Image (cartoon, rainbow, N blue to C red):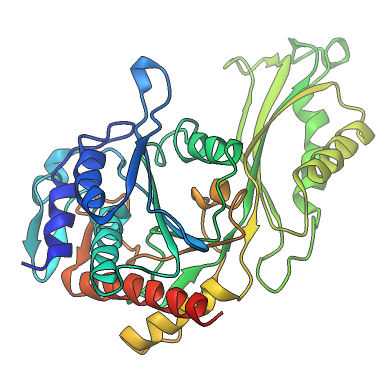
Length: 384
Protein backbone atom coordinates (compact mmCIF):
# COMPACT_ATOMS: atom_id res chain seq x y z
CA UNK A 1 0.00 0.00 0.00
CA UNK A 2 1.39 3.47 -0.88
CA UNK A 3 2.56 5.31 2.21
CA UNK A 4 0.32 8.32 1.56
CA UNK A 5 -2.78 6.15 1.35
CA UNK A 6 -1.74 4.25 4.46
CA UNK A 7 -1.28 7.44 6.49
CA UNK A 8 -4.55 8.88 5.18
CA UNK A 9 -6.38 5.77 6.35
CA UNK A 10 -4.72 5.97 9.77
CA UNK A 11 -5.90 9.57 10.15
CA UNK A 12 -9.44 8.87 8.89
CA UNK A 13 -9.80 6.04 11.40
CA UNK A 14 -9.47 8.54 14.26
CA UNK A 15 -12.87 10.13 15.11
CA UNK A 16 -11.57 13.67 15.43
CA UNK A 17 -14.82 15.66 15.39
CA UNK A 18 -14.16 19.29 16.36
CA UNK A 19 -12.41 20.02 18.71
CA UNK A 20 -11.18 16.46 19.22
CA UNK A 21 -7.85 15.51 17.69
CA UNK A 22 -8.13 11.81 18.64
CA UNK A 23 -4.38 11.32 18.53
CA UNK A 24 -3.83 12.57 14.99
CA UNK A 25 -1.20 15.12 16.00
CA UNK A 26 0.74 12.57 18.04
CA UNK A 27 0.77 10.27 15.02
CA UNK A 28 2.03 13.06 12.78
CA UNK A 29 4.65 14.30 15.25
CA UNK A 30 6.03 10.76 15.44
CA UNK A 31 6.65 10.94 11.68
CA UNK A 32 8.16 14.43 11.79
CA UNK A 33 10.60 14.15 14.71
CA UNK A 34 12.90 11.68 12.88
CA UNK A 35 13.07 14.19 10.01
CA UNK A 36 14.58 16.84 12.27
CA UNK A 37 11.42 18.73 13.17
CA UNK A 38 11.08 20.32 16.59
CA UNK A 39 7.46 19.61 17.52
CA UNK A 40 5.75 22.05 19.87
CA UNK A 41 2.20 21.71 21.16
CA UNK A 42 0.28 24.97 21.54
CA UNK A 43 -3.02 23.60 22.85
CA UNK A 44 -5.56 26.22 23.85
CA UNK A 45 -9.13 26.75 25.02
CA UNK A 46 -11.32 25.87 28.01
CA UNK A 47 -11.37 22.37 29.48
CA UNK A 48 -14.68 21.52 27.82
CA UNK A 49 -13.49 22.65 24.37
CA UNK A 50 -9.76 22.04 24.42
CA UNK A 51 -8.12 22.54 21.04
CA UNK A 52 -5.00 20.66 19.98
CA UNK A 53 -2.40 22.61 18.00
CA UNK A 54 0.98 21.52 16.64
CA UNK A 55 3.78 23.75 15.41
CA UNK A 56 6.61 21.70 13.91
CA UNK A 57 9.66 23.27 12.29
CA UNK A 58 13.06 22.25 10.98
CA UNK A 59 15.97 24.65 11.50
CA UNK A 60 15.72 27.20 8.71
CA UNK A 61 18.72 28.34 6.67
CA UNK A 62 16.64 30.60 4.49
CA UNK A 63 13.01 31.20 3.68
CA UNK A 64 10.46 28.88 5.27
CA UNK A 65 7.49 27.14 3.67
CA UNK A 66 4.64 26.13 5.97
CA UNK A 67 2.20 23.30 5.37
CA UNK A 68 -1.02 24.18 7.20
CA UNK A 69 -4.11 22.11 7.86
CA UNK A 70 -6.63 20.74 10.31
CA UNK A 71 -7.11 17.29 11.78
CA UNK A 72 -10.67 17.97 12.94
CA UNK A 73 -13.69 17.00 10.89
CA UNK A 74 -17.36 17.95 10.89
CA UNK A 75 -19.92 15.63 12.53
CA UNK A 76 -20.91 12.59 10.52
CA UNK A 77 -24.62 13.25 10.31
CA UNK A 78 -27.00 10.26 10.51
CA UNK A 79 -24.83 7.14 10.66
CA UNK A 80 -27.56 5.02 9.07
CA UNK A 81 -27.27 7.10 5.91
CA UNK A 82 -23.60 6.23 5.43
CA UNK A 83 -22.79 3.26 3.21
CA UNK A 84 -19.99 2.32 5.63
CA UNK A 85 -18.67 3.43 9.01
CA UNK A 86 -17.37 6.99 8.50
CA UNK A 87 -14.37 6.29 10.73
CA UNK A 88 -13.50 2.94 9.14
CA UNK A 89 -11.65 3.78 5.91
CA UNK A 90 -13.39 1.83 3.17
CA UNK A 91 -12.60 1.29 -0.53
CA UNK A 92 -15.32 1.05 -3.16
CA UNK A 93 -15.02 1.58 -6.89
CA UNK A 94 -11.59 3.17 -6.67
CA UNK A 95 -12.61 5.62 -3.95
CA UNK A 96 -11.58 5.95 -0.32
CA UNK A 97 -14.59 6.63 1.91
CA UNK A 98 -14.57 8.17 5.37
CA UNK A 99 -15.17 11.42 7.21
CA UNK A 100 -12.23 13.69 6.45
CA UNK A 101 -11.13 11.78 3.35
CA UNK A 102 -11.39 14.95 1.28
CA UNK A 103 -11.46 17.60 4.01
CA UNK A 104 -8.62 17.27 4.77
CA UNK A 105 -6.82 14.22 6.11
CA UNK A 106 -5.64 13.09 2.69
CA UNK A 107 -3.93 16.46 2.20
CA UNK A 108 -2.18 16.16 5.57
CA UNK A 109 -0.98 12.66 4.73
CA UNK A 110 0.28 13.93 1.38
CA UNK A 111 2.08 16.81 3.13
CA UNK A 112 3.99 14.47 5.42
CA UNK A 113 4.99 11.90 2.82
CA UNK A 114 5.98 14.64 0.36
CA UNK A 115 8.31 16.11 2.98
CA UNK A 116 9.72 12.66 3.79
CA UNK A 117 10.53 12.05 0.13
CA UNK A 118 11.93 15.53 -0.41
CA UNK A 119 14.25 15.36 2.59
CA UNK A 120 15.41 11.86 1.65
CA UNK A 121 16.60 13.28 -1.69
CA UNK A 122 17.64 16.71 -0.35
CA UNK A 123 18.79 16.31 3.28
CA UNK A 124 20.16 19.87 3.48
CA UNK A 125 17.64 21.99 1.57
CA UNK A 126 18.00 25.70 0.89
CA UNK A 127 14.58 26.27 2.50
CA UNK A 128 13.08 25.77 5.92
CA UNK A 129 9.96 23.61 6.31
CA UNK A 130 7.26 23.85 8.97
CA UNK A 131 3.84 22.42 9.80
CA UNK A 132 0.95 24.27 11.44
CA UNK A 133 -1.84 21.85 12.34
CA UNK A 134 -4.96 22.36 14.45
CA UNK A 135 -8.10 20.55 15.62
CA UNK A 136 -10.27 23.69 15.46
CA UNK A 137 -10.87 24.74 11.87
CA UNK A 138 -14.33 23.30 11.38
CA UNK A 139 -15.49 24.79 14.70
CA UNK A 140 -15.28 28.31 16.14
CA UNK A 141 -11.68 28.75 14.91
CA UNK A 142 -10.84 30.73 18.03
CA UNK A 143 -8.25 28.55 19.78
CA UNK A 144 -6.70 26.93 16.73
CA UNK A 145 -4.60 28.48 13.98
CA UNK A 146 -5.50 31.96 15.22
CA UNK A 147 -3.77 31.29 18.56
CA UNK A 148 -0.70 29.72 16.95
CA UNK A 149 -0.31 32.68 14.59
CA UNK A 150 -0.52 35.11 17.51
CA UNK A 151 2.23 33.25 19.35
CA UNK A 152 4.42 33.03 16.27
CA UNK A 153 4.01 36.75 15.70
CA UNK A 154 4.95 37.51 19.29
CA UNK A 155 8.26 35.70 18.94
CA UNK A 156 9.03 37.03 15.49
CA UNK A 157 8.82 33.84 13.45
CA UNK A 158 9.58 34.64 9.80
CA UNK A 159 7.39 32.75 7.34
CA UNK A 160 7.70 33.19 3.58
CA UNK A 161 5.24 30.79 1.96
CA UNK A 162 2.27 28.74 3.14
CA UNK A 163 0.31 25.95 1.49
CA UNK A 164 -3.04 25.17 3.12
CA UNK A 165 -4.34 21.70 2.26
CA UNK A 166 -7.98 22.69 1.77
CA UNK A 167 -9.80 20.70 -0.93
CA UNK A 168 -9.71 23.26 -3.73
CA UNK A 169 -9.85 21.13 -6.86
CA UNK A 170 -13.02 20.73 -8.92
CA UNK A 171 -12.73 17.80 -11.33
CA UNK A 172 -9.10 16.70 -11.04
CA UNK A 173 -6.44 17.29 -8.41
CA UNK A 174 -4.60 20.48 -9.29
CA UNK A 175 -7.17 22.00 -11.64
CA UNK A 176 -7.81 24.87 -9.19
CA UNK A 177 -5.89 26.51 -6.39
CA UNK A 178 -7.05 29.32 -4.15
CA UNK A 179 -4.73 32.30 -4.09
CA UNK A 180 -6.95 34.32 -1.78
CA UNK A 181 -10.26 34.44 0.04
CA UNK A 182 -12.86 37.08 0.72
CA UNK A 183 -13.29 38.52 4.18
CA UNK A 184 -16.43 37.87 6.21
CA UNK A 185 -18.21 40.49 8.33
CA UNK A 186 -21.52 39.71 10.04
CA UNK A 187 -24.04 42.01 11.66
CA UNK A 188 -27.00 41.50 14.00
CA UNK A 189 -29.30 44.49 13.58
CA UNK A 190 -32.12 45.14 16.06
CA UNK A 191 -34.56 47.82 14.91
CA UNK A 192 -36.70 49.11 17.78
CA UNK A 193 -40.32 50.17 17.60
CA UNK A 194 -43.29 50.41 19.93
CA UNK A 195 -45.47 47.34 20.46
CA UNK A 196 -49.20 47.77 20.19
CA UNK A 197 -52.53 46.46 18.95
CA UNK A 198 -52.55 46.03 15.21
CA UNK A 199 -55.98 47.78 15.02
CA UNK A 200 -54.51 50.94 16.57
CA UNK A 201 -51.30 51.56 14.57
CA UNK A 202 -51.36 55.24 15.59
CA UNK A 203 -50.56 54.11 19.13
CA UNK A 204 -47.59 51.93 18.09
CA UNK A 205 -44.53 52.14 15.87
CA UNK A 206 -43.96 49.20 13.56
CA UNK A 207 -40.21 48.44 13.36
CA UNK A 208 -40.69 46.10 10.40
CA UNK A 209 -42.25 48.87 8.32
CA UNK A 210 -39.46 51.23 9.37
CA UNK A 211 -36.69 48.76 8.60
CA UNK A 212 -37.85 47.67 5.15
CA UNK A 213 -36.80 50.80 3.18
CA UNK A 214 -33.36 50.75 4.76
CA UNK A 215 -32.96 47.03 4.07
CA UNK A 216 -34.00 47.54 0.47
CA UNK A 217 -31.37 50.24 0.08
CA UNK A 218 -28.68 48.03 1.62
CA UNK A 219 -29.66 45.17 -0.68
CA UNK A 220 -29.43 47.42 -3.74
CA UNK A 221 -26.12 49.04 -2.81
CA UNK A 222 -23.04 48.33 -4.91
CA UNK A 223 -20.30 48.17 -2.29
CA UNK A 224 -17.43 47.94 -4.73
CA UNK A 225 -16.74 46.58 -8.21
CA UNK A 226 -14.29 43.85 -7.22
CA UNK A 227 -11.00 43.53 -9.07
CA UNK A 228 -9.04 41.14 -11.26
CA UNK A 229 -8.96 38.52 -8.50
CA UNK A 230 -12.20 39.06 -6.54
CA UNK A 231 -15.89 39.46 -7.41
CA UNK A 232 -17.67 42.52 -6.02
CA UNK A 233 -18.40 42.57 -2.29
CA UNK A 234 -21.74 40.92 -1.46
CA UNK A 235 -24.24 41.88 1.28
CA UNK A 236 -26.84 39.25 2.13
CA UNK A 237 -29.55 38.90 4.77
CA UNK A 238 -29.76 35.44 6.33
CA UNK A 239 -32.51 35.79 8.96
CA UNK A 240 -35.33 38.15 9.94
CA UNK A 241 -37.06 37.67 13.29
CA UNK A 242 -40.04 39.79 14.29
CA UNK A 243 -43.42 39.53 15.92
CA UNK A 244 -44.86 37.80 18.96
CA UNK A 245 -46.51 34.97 17.05
CA UNK A 246 -49.89 36.65 17.33
CA UNK A 247 -51.48 38.14 14.22
CA UNK A 248 -52.96 41.14 16.01
CA UNK A 249 -49.82 42.55 17.65
CA UNK A 250 -47.40 45.08 16.17
CA UNK A 251 -43.98 43.91 17.39
CA UNK A 252 -41.71 46.01 19.52
CA UNK A 253 -38.59 45.07 17.56
CA UNK A 254 -37.30 43.18 14.56
CA UNK A 255 -33.91 41.47 14.34
CA UNK A 256 -32.03 41.06 11.04
CA UNK A 257 -28.91 38.93 10.59
CA UNK A 258 -26.73 39.82 7.61
CA UNK A 259 -23.27 39.15 6.25
CA UNK A 260 -20.72 40.77 3.98
CA UNK A 261 -18.32 38.67 1.93
CA UNK A 262 -15.92 41.41 1.02
CA UNK A 263 -12.94 41.71 -1.26
CA UNK A 264 -9.72 43.69 -0.95
CA UNK A 265 -11.41 46.71 -2.52
CA UNK A 266 -13.35 47.31 0.71
CA UNK A 267 -12.42 47.37 4.38
CA UNK A 268 -14.42 46.16 7.36
CA UNK A 269 -14.41 49.64 8.91
CA UNK A 270 -15.51 51.24 5.65
CA UNK A 271 -18.40 48.82 5.25
CA UNK A 272 -19.52 49.41 8.83
CA UNK A 273 -19.53 53.17 8.31
CA UNK A 274 -21.62 52.89 5.16
CA UNK A 275 -24.21 50.62 6.83
CA UNK A 276 -24.57 52.97 9.79
CA UNK A 277 -24.97 55.91 7.41
CA UNK A 278 -27.91 54.19 5.67
CA UNK A 279 -29.62 53.26 8.94
CA UNK A 280 -29.15 56.77 10.35
CA UNK A 281 -30.43 58.40 7.17
CA UNK A 282 -33.65 56.38 7.52
CA UNK A 283 -34.09 57.60 11.08
CA UNK A 284 -34.09 54.17 12.69
CA UNK A 285 -33.73 53.49 16.39
CA UNK A 286 -31.44 50.48 16.42
CA UNK A 287 -28.64 48.44 17.93
CA UNK A 288 -26.06 46.81 15.68
CA UNK A 289 -23.56 44.18 16.81
CA UNK A 290 -20.68 43.37 14.45
CA UNK A 291 -18.58 40.20 14.15
CA UNK A 292 -15.50 40.23 11.94
CA UNK A 293 -14.94 36.60 10.96
CA UNK A 294 -11.85 37.24 8.88
CA UNK A 295 -10.03 39.73 6.69
CA UNK A 296 -9.60 39.07 2.97
CA UNK A 297 -6.21 37.98 1.73
CA UNK A 298 -4.64 37.75 -1.70
CA UNK A 299 -1.43 36.20 -3.02
CA UNK A 300 -0.60 37.62 -6.42
CA UNK A 301 1.48 35.49 -8.82
CA UNK A 302 5.05 35.23 -7.51
CA UNK A 303 7.47 32.69 -6.07
CA UNK A 304 4.87 30.42 -4.48
CA UNK A 305 2.20 30.53 -7.17
CA UNK A 306 4.84 29.88 -9.84
CA UNK A 307 6.32 26.95 -7.91
CA UNK A 308 2.89 25.38 -7.42
CA UNK A 309 1.73 25.95 -11.00
CA UNK A 310 4.94 24.38 -12.35
CA UNK A 311 4.53 21.42 -10.00
CA UNK A 312 0.93 20.84 -11.12
CA UNK A 313 1.86 21.13 -14.78
CA UNK A 314 4.75 18.70 -14.42
CA UNK A 315 2.69 16.15 -12.47
CA UNK A 316 -0.69 16.34 -14.19
CA UNK A 317 -0.30 18.38 -17.35
CA UNK A 318 -3.00 20.76 -16.11
CA UNK A 319 -2.83 24.54 -16.36
CA UNK A 320 -4.30 25.32 -12.97
CA UNK A 321 -6.90 28.02 -12.42
CA UNK A 322 -6.39 30.68 -9.76
CA UNK A 323 -9.54 31.36 -7.74
CA UNK A 324 -10.70 33.28 -4.67
CA UNK A 325 -14.22 31.83 -4.54
CA UNK A 326 -15.78 29.92 -1.67
CA UNK A 327 -15.85 30.45 2.06
CA UNK A 328 -13.10 31.28 4.50
CA UNK A 329 -10.17 29.15 5.63
CA UNK A 330 -7.39 29.33 8.19
CA UNK A 331 -5.35 30.99 5.47
CA UNK A 332 -6.94 34.24 6.65
CA UNK A 333 -5.02 34.00 9.92
CA UNK A 334 -1.74 32.82 8.43
CA UNK A 335 -1.76 35.65 5.87
CA UNK A 336 -1.28 38.07 8.77
CA UNK A 337 2.30 36.85 9.23
CA UNK A 338 3.04 35.20 5.88
CA UNK A 339 3.08 37.24 2.64
CA UNK A 340 2.29 34.36 0.26
CA UNK A 341 -0.52 31.91 1.10
CA UNK A 342 -2.25 29.53 -1.28
CA UNK A 343 -4.64 26.61 -0.82
CA UNK A 344 -4.29 23.35 -2.73
CA UNK A 345 -5.98 20.03 -2.16
CA UNK A 346 -8.09 17.27 -3.75
CA UNK A 347 -11.52 17.69 -5.38
CA UNK A 348 -14.12 19.08 -2.99
CA UNK A 349 -17.39 17.66 -4.36
CA UNK A 350 -18.12 15.49 -1.30
CA UNK A 351 -16.77 17.58 1.58
CA UNK A 352 -19.09 17.65 4.63
CA UNK A 353 -21.45 15.22 2.90
CA UNK A 354 -22.68 11.74 3.74
CA UNK A 355 -20.25 9.22 2.18
CA UNK A 356 -17.43 11.74 1.89
CA UNK A 357 -14.66 10.29 -0.24
CA UNK A 358 -11.57 10.90 -2.33
CA UNK A 359 -10.60 9.13 -5.53
CA UNK A 360 -7.62 6.92 -4.71
CA UNK A 361 -5.97 7.79 -8.02
CA UNK A 362 -5.87 11.44 -6.91
CA UNK A 363 -3.82 10.77 -3.78
CA UNK A 364 -0.33 10.08 -5.13
CA UNK A 365 -0.46 12.96 -7.64
CA UNK A 366 -1.37 15.32 -4.79
CA UNK A 367 1.62 14.13 -2.76
CA UNK A 368 3.85 14.50 -5.80
CA UNK A 369 2.61 18.05 -6.42
CA UNK A 370 3.53 19.00 -2.86
CA UNK A 371 6.95 17.35 -3.24
CA UNK A 372 7.59 19.03 -6.60
CA UNK A 373 6.62 22.38 -5.07
CA UNK A 374 9.29 21.88 -2.40
CA UNK A 375 11.79 21.00 -5.10
CA UNK A 376 10.89 24.13 -7.05
CA UNK A 377 11.16 26.43 -4.02
CA UNK A 378 14.48 24.82 -3.09
CA UNK A 379 15.79 25.37 -6.62
CA UNK A 380 14.65 29.00 -6.57
CA UNK A 381 16.53 29.69 -3.36
CA UNK A 382 19.62 27.66 -4.28
CA UNK A 383 19.95 29.73 -7.44
CA UNK A 384 19.38 33.05 -5.68
